[in-house]
Length: 354
Image (tube, rainbow, N blue to C red; front, side, top):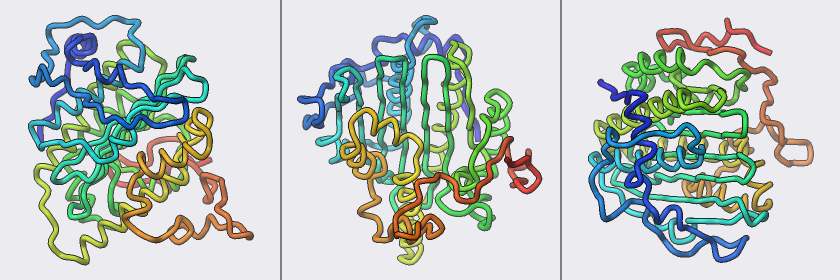
């Protein structure tokens, strides 16, 4: 499998292209500060269906992260077109743009479907205090056991916190065949970026259940060079996921489809309850609306793909009064360094834990 890695100059050229960033995305506004925009807006520039010519533009060092994140989204959508037709998701009618309670911070949402993709969606947040967020994910239909593409990027005035991965749908600790099927050929890609984007510090043991051996978990300060590496990583990982999607075959065994469905529902249930980004949403739009965005948009399917609750899947989080324990880690340990070796084998028992 070959991976395209843009050079720093081509990356810089891409970022400042006016044609690579469709004006309708910039124009999304909500009708009131606590209501969702009911108009479905297209992000893709219909006047220019061709892919952006990255070599014709120049990057400026002071470009804000929000524009960088939006252009990542546009680039991903353009990269998807040669692989599969995308159509707007019905979610787009109700979830496109939202203005936070401060009347300044904007949440912009996009969602699509495809023959093998149940939901491809993005959330981009532009804060007025230097805070920027990108949450981009692609969830396969239950007929396919594809990993889940996941990009969670958070930027503050001084720091970038990055998670980028092809989250395994099934347990790769115990199911060697699934790991072999999807990750064996991607280990060199993970090794490449584990050198360029070092491990970001403590990571809870529970989180490892939803990460693959090629996960990028890192922190760095903002700079053109660091953003260039991140762009390259995002592009390589997304291209790898698209190639896996191209080769994936539809499952016809009803029991295996049901198993895929439950595995995705378990993943969504965990993320909807324990994702660390929820605090940001609650601060911006309030608890009720944050819960709606989380369950109906970001982790859509948690109410549709299954009937099990969080405590059904994770009974260790049950409090004596029946509530869900708000702690993010019940095991009580985290990994200080990457718990996989150069072959993608889990070595967590030999990694320093705190």
